[in-house]
Image (cartoon, rainbow over all chains, first blue to last red; front, side, top):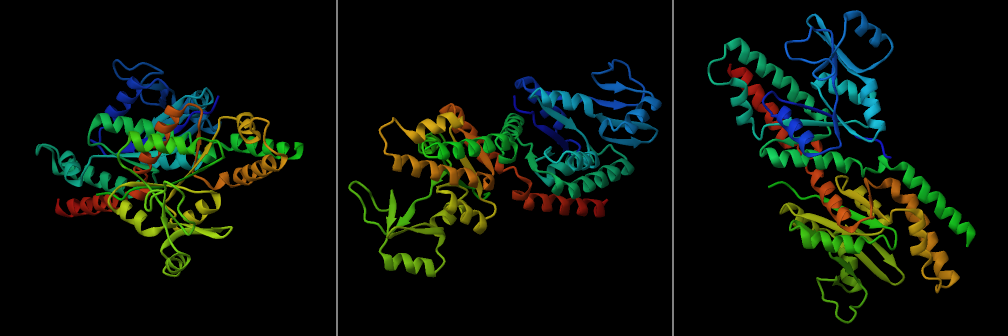
Length: 209
Length: 209
């Protein structure tokens, strides 16, 4: 069985990446969503292993020391990270794994796993992005500024991504996302084994004639 | 309008690439097949501008000197080449252009136009490739040897291609071909303009707040 494709999805706030992911997982069977680990406490309704793997600080730090994260980061008082074990298990079963993480995490994943596919989701225009960032005119100056400056940072990181997914029509966007992941399976560098086998066998045939 | 994608398709003899191309052009409207130029005489039923652009040796050489070919080669007594003008016109109209050429030509196209997408088509296994190359047992030793050695050369060139297309089921193969070309439109490096515009506008918004 061929190994699954690891895809990282990031995007501007309001790009609709959550909705895209949900639709993708509903429509196509082969995808697995990676579940993050965190040291923050579960909120009401959150289930261990579904929303997050909930860990103590000591457990999390032990996982770090054992190199059990693809990437992790600390926000305020808590750790968040992508456990390697689950992702690795899904990929080796041939499932395509999706990580929804922000731009710094995406960069770390690409360094660690160069064959990971990085996809950035964006609203169809700067105008629409602006509307979503500024909100309905009820936000404080501070909130707007922080959103704009975050988006500006994210825009600067877009160039490190492999694909740009423009979320204009949700249906089309979900299918384009699915198709680009599946097309990655045809990449020559993911088919070295096939390629070497055919080369080897042709040499044998030539000797045999 | 966004520029079309230039795709080169090559493949082992018997890989079915002709059939794939025909089906692709029938099913999807946005593709244009590049027509080669040649100095050989038209055969019965061949129409200038459909099978080939038929040129005199002098005309062909003048086109070479004016850099009007993406790639060209000489086989036995005749020249064959891909005229730049037609390809360029289609791409700028947003049409996706397909060139069906052999491995040396494909390499030249990639050098000249790095954003070209190189796709190699193969039967699903070495065993099946062997059967197609050896034929029905009625071929001379010489014919078989020449096919095997050509295939062996082609196999060595596969690594220079971007994608490997395994022709197991024709329908699936045509759709996979279509999807990989369309996914190329989402590649980040093909969307620099969008990316720069969003970055620019976010800076403006930040200044404006």
